[in-house]
Amino acid sequence: MPTLALLTSPDLPDLARGERLVIPELKKLGIDAQPVAWDGDDWKQCDALVVRTIWDYFVRYDEFRKFLDEVAATNIPIFNPLEVLRWNSDKLYLRELEELGVRTPEQIFLRDAAELDLQKFLAENFNGELVVKPTVSAAARATFRVTHANAAEAQTYFQNDDYGMLIVQEFLPEIVNDGEYSIIFFGGECSHTIRKLAAPGDFRVQEKHGGTVEPVTLAENHIEQARAILKSHPLLEHLLYARVDCVLRDDKLILCELEILEPELFLNWSPTAPAAFARAIRDMLALT
Image (tube, rainbow, N blue to C red; front, side, top):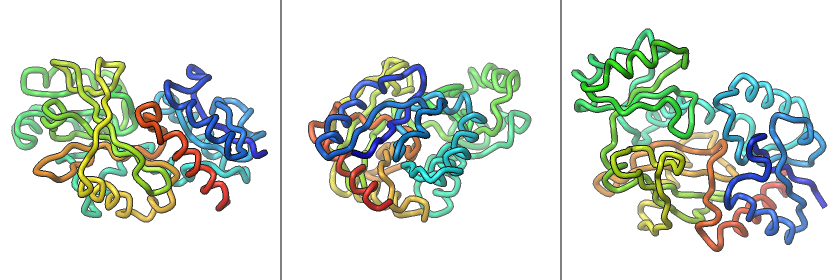
């Protein structure tokens, strides 16, 4: 029976919430899967690796890149593939997708906080409201919703620390009015869709910030738009998993994030998702 490491962070030794639901489904398919910390050595004894809840990678980014180099030096297959993980770990990928015709928020990329001039950006772009955050970040870390009223505070925040490259985007009112949708794919096929809603008075949809989650059914044309995003870039072929985070404007998707590194897959929100994910893993392993 092949041994599969479901990579996780040391503070989530048993994965998170419904992510463990795939383990018994894999066992039915003859695959022994267990959570394994990405920053240890146990993964080196496994036959294959699937990145799951490594939710500390962005605060240990140099260590994470070294880990990817260590995997590259072995013959152990990892999913998603190494080049995909590297590419998706920095939000610069959004610029590439935008250049390929994917609809994204209006956005500007800055080398560092020295180029940040929030009052100027508010006056010239973004209709008087924007979001600024590091390009290497997750879970709304160091993320500010900025208007003229708090621009000076946000400016000082980023200038007092080194967050590296920054992304400045238009604020999407759809997030607070309608929610952010996550369309989840396994092996290129849509599995399920959920909607994330921010707490009243907030814009962050993550549960740690008071956000809530609910299952939803989107129209087929919305699923096809998400599928088109996954066909827009050569790196996005043959993905094991992908989560397209988006809002809807005029019945069209605006891509917020393309999560193909370590997204929560919300397996506990769909009765068919754990088995579908397990089958996709089996099929991907068969190709290695």
